[in-house]
Image 1 (cartoon, one colour):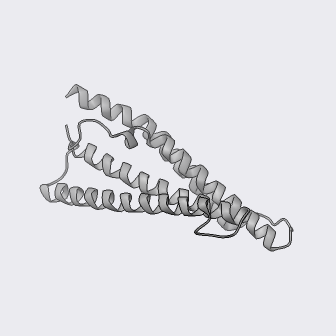
Image 2 (cartoon, one colour):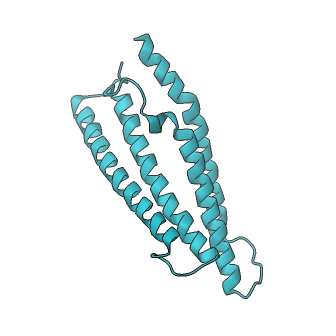
Length: 161
């Protein structure tokens, strides 16, 4: 049973969005995977230490963002009743979101360490960007917790109909 959509126009729009999100998600995930490999091999950034870790976490975050977009496309397909059961990404979206939040926090920590190195080892108070990264991570974890509760309910409602 699909969640009632106001009209066929909205249904067509959501299907177009789902296709666009899926394509962009695969492109971003592929780009993030390529950047991660390049940073690990040392092709993208010749630096070492905290700067390299910052680039690594940023590239891994890009990959995870692409995977999250693909999960959103799966969610739209599930809501439109195009899919009978949630896909693998959607079933594990809470863990993917937790990993994305941790990657963002680690990238921010690496950026902070790079800043400390550039200032000659003087420890600085947290910047507004650090507070923003913590708030973003908390919101992402909250969304993961909500989805962990919602996805089993959607699966169960699909079997009742």
